[in-house]
Length: 428
Ligand SMILES: NC(=O)c1ccc[n+]([C@@H]2O[C@H](COP(=O)([O-])OP(=O)(O)OC[C@H]3O[C@@H](n4cnc5c(N)ncnc54)[C@H](OP(=O)(O)O)[C@@H]3O)[C@@H](O)[C@H]2O)c1
Image 1: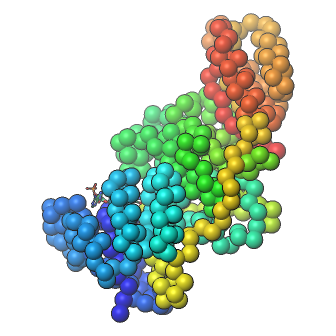
Image 2 (image 1 turned 45 degrees about the horizontal axis):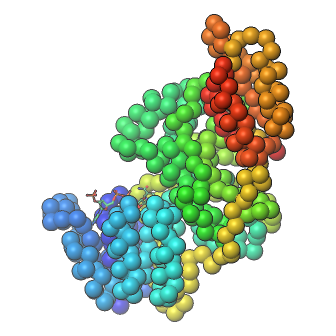
Image 3 (image 1 turned 30 degrees about the vertical axis):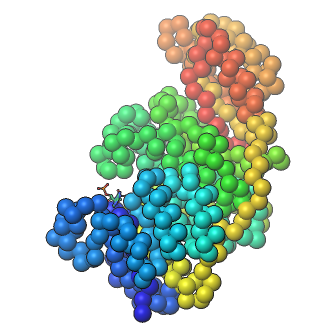
């Protein structure tokens, strides 16, 4: 006997699974307490089927998903097609047909996970998706299992390899945003439409999932503020370096007295913060908790083998639970009422880059403006920007998002000053 699997899609990640099943076959079989067999693989059309067979893949390729869904011998369906549809419909049908499901589809899980998780629960089926956050880093199961006795207070993460690769080029080698994007596309890290990666959308999907595992709260994707890296200029990068910081796109989920907040934004990280040294396409999740204190989980956030390893671990876990007759427990059992933090409770230091007329009294004007909002300065830097313009950089003491909204509105309304950029600064 063996446990039969149906794969939906045979792209980068899915085609890494056969290698693992062969390479680590004995270990996997012992852990799963059964043999795992890829019984059928869904591909788009006959041409794709012929191409794969000609390339030496000896699988039973099918082009109609019903061939998998109506096959009673297939117990586990592994969705690795990506995008929302038809993945959502296929997973729903698989659960309705009584099949356990594994996916790596963060877009789908962040936007429709709630209903799929509920359906799996109702049917007593497993729905696992370890690879959906930080690909090869086993962070979800770590939060669900190893940190179950701990109270997580904040999760910070470098969660998108493409934007981190670009930021590394911009910070370490002084590249412009456009040059870094062109290189990321040339190397295949960024898609031709890079919006999800560079605008913080992909990282925001992961923040939604992390908020469930770390804080037991289900927030909607729309409730995650996200800002990308496209507005970061070489001037911002240079000033950050001068002041002892590195800029990275960081996901930040934390619990305040009023609830949780989740956001993704370019963030000034002190150079000695562990996340500051996470470079190139690597990912890391930095967890602050009461019991452990600070811990960081670092590794490849994407790539065929790392991601396929996480997917296969989910398959093995289901197979093991089937043998032990314990299948059907939710992937994440931590759940409590979702409360969103008041903006006045979400506090950070902030960086402001502002151009002002190059005349005396401008710093005083800014100080009065910030002071009226009860915001104080931690560091100030003034540089000549052009013949008649100065560039003022301010790093504030801790201030709330309410104060941020007020001061941003006020600065935007001043005709002879321009607010160039505002970024969060990680500080005490
Ligand atoms: N790649 C990574 O490193 C990584 C890391 C973490 C998570 N993930 C997630 O893993 C999933 C798979 O990613 P991937 O990189 O393997 O993607 P991929 O290389 O694009 O593979 C997806 C495959 O599914 C096929 N497909 C799409 N719709 C289909 C349909 N209706 N029927 C049959 N086949 C269909 C695609 O065919 P066409 O090419 O013809 O459309 C493609 O061959 C995604 O959800 C992704 O977000 C990937």
